[in-house]
Structures are given as C-alpha cells and as structure tokens.
Length: 336
Image 1 (cartoon, rainbow, N blue to C red):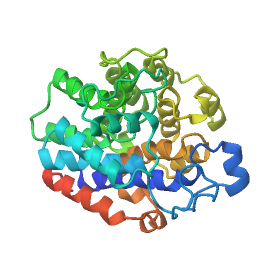
Image 2 (image 1 turned 60 degrees about the horizontal axis):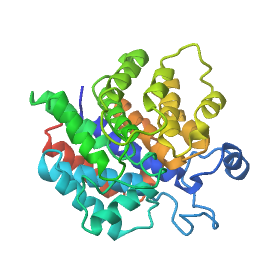
Image 3 (image 1 turned 30 degrees about the vertical axis):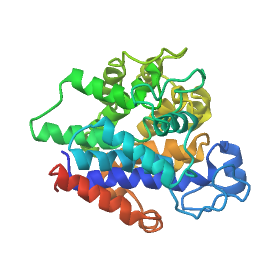
C-alpha cells in the first residue's frame, strides 16, 4: 500500500497543518472564532503574537523543521542513527532558533551543544520537562521508513524498534510518556500508509495505537499515563463532538497527555476529509502541532489530492518539503 504520492502527502500535510495554524498557536477556540472566524487559508500572525509576530503567512515552525531533520538523517544513513539525528537537531536549532522550539527540545539541544551525550541530554530536574508533544510532531518519517523495510523484507525486530525510538526520545524528553507518544504516533503513521482510505478501520487503528503505547518501558515515570488516554479512544459510546473532545482533552494543550489523543479523536471523526484539518486547528490549543499531526495522517492515508491547491501553492519553502519527500522515496525505493 505504500506509495510515493502518500509519502509526499504525509510530508505536505505535516507542513501545511503546521503553517496553517502557526499564527494562532495557544489561542482558544473562542478567540480564533472571534478574531478570524474559521481559518481555512494561510494568515499572518497577529502583531502581538508571543513567538511568531512578523512572520509571513504560510511559514512553518519547529514541527516541520525537525521532521525534515529526521528525514534527512534517514536519507543520509539509511537507518535510525542517533549521532546523525543529534547533529541535525543542533544544526536546525542554530540555523533559526526562532521557530518556536518547545522548552524540553530547547533544553535538550542546548545540552547537546554544551557537550552532553544524547543519552542524557534530555534529563532535567524540572518536573515540567519531557511532557510536551515534541516527539509525535517529528517522528512521521520513521513510520514511513519502517513501512519501506516491510516491503524490502528487512524489518527491525520489536526490541530493535523500541530501543531505537527510546534512544531518540531520551535526547530531549526523558519521560516514559514521551516514549509512549513517539511509539504511538509512529504506529499511527505506519497504519495510515499501509492501508487505504476506503479500507480504513477505526477500531483496528486504535488497537495499533494501544499496542505501540504498551511497548514503552523506559524514561522517568510521569504522573499521567498516555495509555489510558488511548484506551478512551476505543469507547464508541462517548460523545466525540468537537466540543466534547476539547473538554475531555484539555482544549488541546501542548501537554502530550492532552494533545495527542485530542488530535487522534479529531482524525477519527473523519479521516478522509480536509475539513478534519480545519476542525482540529480551529478548536484551539497547541494549534500548529495538533494540525501538523493530523495533517500528516490525512496525507499518509489519502495522498496529496486531499489538500486544496491554495494550501500547497501558498506553503512557503514547499520546494524544500517536496524535494526532501522525493529524496526520501528514492532512498527507500518507494514508487507509485
């Protein structure tokens, strides 16, 4: 089922969702509605935006930048290589630290710059560190890479997979919940790339997420457990209206315990419509990351055709996105 068009769709969806809702990051649903009505096209950030004032419409943030960093590392090495990933994280941050890097990612990268090894650079005495969504926002290329291994009949063992992803996580987010989020979203992307839109099974999708979340064993334990949030997604008796999703999952805040199930819940409402991307972003919270996560899944499942032309053409540096996606497909022999 893995095709070039759907890998391109994955990369485009990540960047489009990121850029589309970058201007309203941390805004509430009501604030977005009162100031912009319903966002479906790129807009400039407000002049008083905390992080992105002065940015152009259609610019993406650290979510896309670090996704490309991981993709470039996979293309270079043909495998998950922590030394290469570490170097590319540092280079990306030094090239432009104004892209909205989260606290845990910033602290981890600064530790790397100071000479700490990646296996300990994510350790922090700050109890708030390691609980954000800095992992699921960037790991989609690993899902595509693992799908390509299946086609080449050279899969990683489960133990190798968990070890590699745990290593990646510990570089910036030294918590078990962060490991859960990384494993879970890689599995989500794999599932979307390896099925078709007309055969997408919501129940089996959630079972795959549960399977992946249970693989996490390392990282400092946090008070909350992401697994229980994934279990909730399997409850078909719950109210899954946008309002109910926001209420249940902390208005989509950057806390991964909220943001990841929030994003999955919106995706599961309608995994074959561009309106899903608009719905999750306009619901408020960590809008750019939530929309980037959902955009990546929409593109992986449906291909590039799901995105209207104005979102593709208005995306800044779209050539870089498409060139990286093409090089990724060439490296891992993914064709249409």
